[in-house]
Image (cartoon, rainbow, N blue to C red; front, side):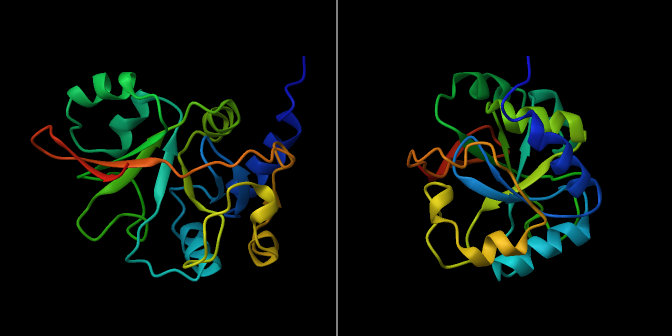
Length: 191
């Protein structure tokens, strides 16, 4: 059986593998994405969003094991915490690994969200690398709640726009953001 997003996977992979940008639905709002390990692609996202590099972006991962590739010595308690989450939540970790300098925060931290959305998980697994995810808007503009709210400038600035879920008019919200501190405590940055 053909999954209704399958026709978008191959074009996304071709664009991502060539350093391009995609516009895609995530487990929260629509996002601008690229291969998170490609420094030039990350730079293109900053340019499209008209955003300063000091305001780092997040990455999406498909499974918990992948954390070990992009975070230095994650606290084992984080895996229990992740199991309990119901709302999509981005965790900010110290000690980012294997990612371009322009993606990592100046303090060496990185925001990571483990996605449960099947389209995103499938795409990330097939790519074999994390995806950048940042809201599909120009910096300073409101984040779009659904595809119809994305500006023409953003759509024109990417190399491929996913068809899957374009007609979904449900209003979606950005993820919660929680800083995972070195001592195992959490600081809520966005509920």
